[in-house]
Image 1 (cartoon, rainbow, N blue to C red):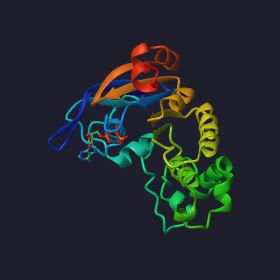
Image 2: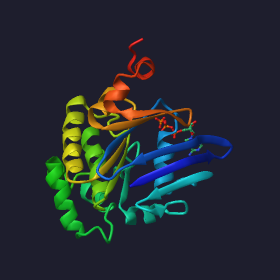
Image 3: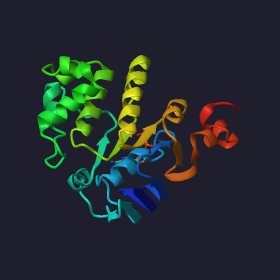
Image 4: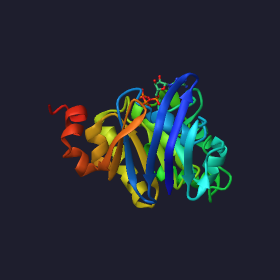
Length: 234
Ligand code: ATP
């Protein structure tokens, strides 16, 4: 579904990604792990057309995303839940969700919003409240809900659990499991390795802009190199 081959991305003079290759099959849950600054957000941004690639190719269901804009990628069925949520705090929950409406999503804005409310019932109760007044976890639900308004086939989640209480993290993960079971492909960027590997089937590890390891969640958990670096089991 998503085929990334030898992609490099520069931020001005700084090369953030070097020859990164990664594949995601339809229906999979794939993790992208790595420390701060490893390049995870840059890769998400390159997929959705926020950053231009300096080399390599990104193909999505056979379409090249090389020159695609963010709007093009939404139209193709890719939705990003950005790091830091990027909500409009002075606007209501409903208005924030509406921002994610996409004309060809297969449902009206009202229909899509009802679906989101079905997944996150608390948002229906808070629909008229300003997003800025919600708890961290509820704000994250709005950010995910906004992405779901375009009825994506692939959901990219960039560190969605920062500032979210552990109990709410579990709730959101359960909802994400349900969405994935409904056929939505997912890429989860996460710094909490245990949490990520509890959710995804496979993962790639980025280090200094390069993919250094990849494997199934089980393979990674049993890889001594991986454990030493990321699970603190030295
Ligand atoms: P984090 O968890 O901190 O978001 P990350 O793995 O997502 O880390 P990136 O945000 O992709 O990493 O950053 C990769 C490198 O690119 C870092 O050195 C970062 O400082 C740099 N960088 C990221 N975005 C920009 C930008 N818009 N302009 C300049 N440099 C950037």
